[in-house]
Length: 380
Image (tube, rainbow, N blue to C red; front, side):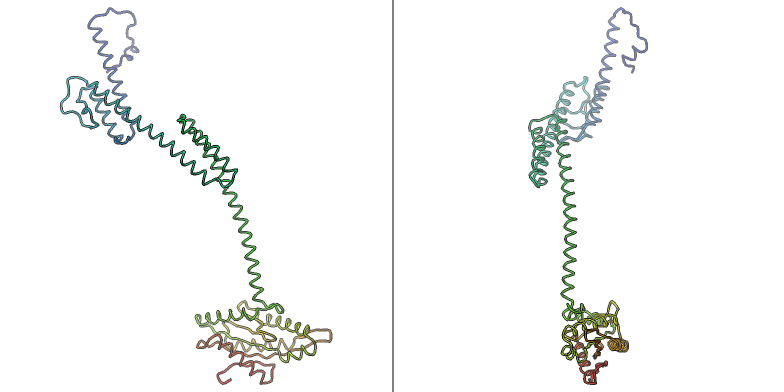
């Protein structure tokens, strides 16, 4: 159906025309139909952009608006009066139900108003409560407390005074920006503090490791001490049992060392101990080889993954190196010899028994004339 403005654009006469009852009735009919078309279009737009209310969802509103639009255009039955039912009335009235339409639109608009006002009020309250909570969480010092309190106070005033949403949005954005900056500053402080603490912990760990190592070392020879050896012996014994690999224990004692101290003094004796310790380290350079000062002039060497025959060869090489050793002092050069007792690990025994077997073999080497290596046997 052509609209009245289309008729004007199409060149409707602009000169005065004599009015007749038929012409007046025709113009009224056109205007009425145009108004009905526009009202129906408004109803359909209202339905198209409807949103869910508390007890009425958007599809239902859309369907009601469509039913009312049809009622206006083609005189279909109006939706049931006084309810939100989406069904049409069973009998179409002989007239357009303008009071019913007005009641429907008024009731719908009131519901929308109540819903929107409550949502805005609740949103304001949530924003205020959230910001107030952030104040307590984020403000670690007085400066932060002052900054956050000021911006949240402005936001709270905007909420309590029902300021326009534009003002509320601005204050909320300002508060969020400030809190974001504070969080970023705090995160940077925490990272700096974490790096500082990490550095201190690494330094402390290094100091503790050094202190623990010093506790495990003999202060004179810088070899492991007896305490460190006892702990290592237990571990090697258990590991060898699990792996099935051989291991040997060599106990060494400097021959006639008491005479060295008596004749040349303890400073020369200490020098001899240091040089003999270096000789042992050079003779057993593997990382798995464990060399310790057991006490006095006694040294002990723990060899992992080493069978008895290989241990004998290594022990004899060590004795040759000791014989060639010369300890220089004010009165000349001092030569040394040593005796070694050797015991191979027996999985049927214990670490303590293994140590006693090496000590028994050392005693046998002493009785046999010193400057030699003896292996422990059951008949020893």
